[in-house]
Image (cartoon, rainbow, N blue to C red):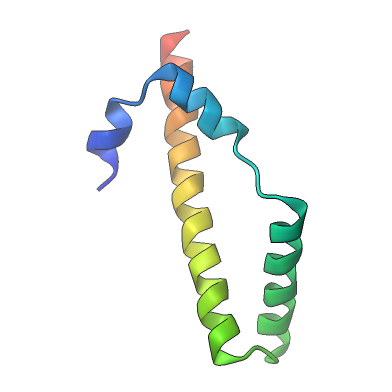
Length: 75
């Protein structure tokens, strides 16, 4: 689904995408939600928030993988 967009990714954008990192506060929030989910102490609202984080992380990981490939192919 992302292929048409990622095939045209400029190298400068690929580098910026690879530098993308979550803030310490965001990482702490995700870790807190993960711990609650693993112990069964997560509310429905928190579970939805956690699932959104997991989905976003998956998409960003895929895009970063494509960015690495684009930069490797350019070298």
